[in-house]
Length: 146
Image 1: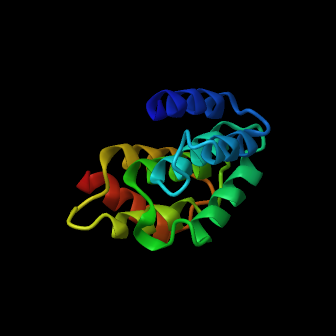
Image 2 (image 1 turned 45 degrees about the vertical axis):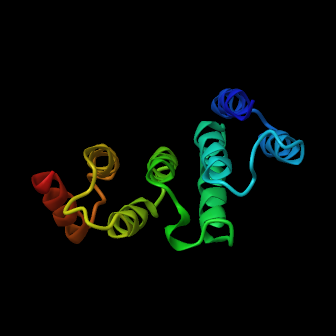
């Protein structure tokens, strides 16, 4: 069933299987997974988060987000969390930019979800000696609002 295929693929993604995208494409070609849904993007992000080369994975995540498959608002909140986690793990300079973009994309919410703020705090902690004052103020404001 599609649900069982998704769970199996999720397990492979979490194991960081080297040829995961090829396996996923084969499942899409075989009709086990719908390649046009958010699930495909989520699985690719889950794999990127669990791969050994996190810097390259963060770059692939950015390329995927910039691609036509997930333009603008086509990224779900659960995908946003994985993108933030991937950038945090890679200690990417793009973390704060993505955080702000995602907060703006979540319409009707006065503040970032608490789980996102926790990631923001972890990011700021890792950069505490080289965090610009403006970014430091932004982090403090987000924490106070949460």
